[in-house]
Image (cartoon, rainbow, N blue to C red; front, side, top):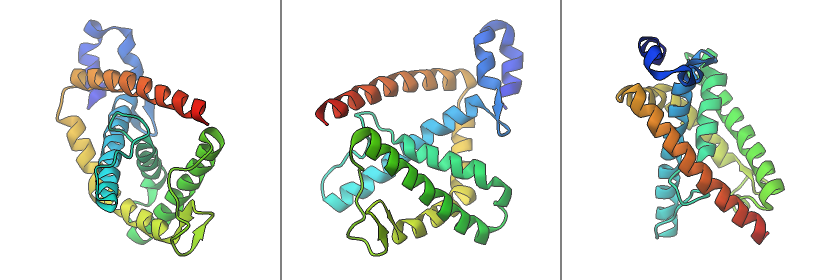
Amino acid sequence: MATAYYRKRKGNEGEFMMAWTHTVYGTDWYHLIQWFILYSFLGWLVESIYMSFCNRKLTNRGFAFSPFCPIYAVGALSVYAILRPVSDNYIVLYFAGAAVATFLEYITAVIMQRTLGNVWWDYHEKPFNYKGILCLESTVAWGFYTLILFAFLQGFVEMLVNSYSYRTGMILATVVILVYGFDFFLHLFRAKTKA
């Protein structure tokens, strides 16, 4: 675990590293940040592949140039944190996952509408939609994604994070945060000036 590694290296790394070992919901910041980066990338990858198939051309579904969709990380980590207590009951997990993810999708749409003036998806053509921002099809899918998250994906992400050294992870996280932060704010500025 990262905390044990940190204690061995504390004298060499300095006090800056302490922030990485503070815990939130029983997990240290180091792992939360690593998981966030991986879920952002995996969300971008799946969404871009799906939309490229639908559009019959390569489609970047990220907001910026870099290959990340942070909303997927927010969704995955929120659902994981909230629903861990019911993770052994797949029926409850399915319905709770569908509800929590649909709520997050709604909140994301409201925030996007208020900050950017539009929402990047449109479900108006889907049956049982609400204002084009929610639809039954997506809600059903969110429930299945939640089951996949708990049955397979979180374990896979943890395995990936534990496959490289703590130091490599800190460097990776720092670089990704800086690059994506610059990329995101550049595109946010451009989007706001066009609106």
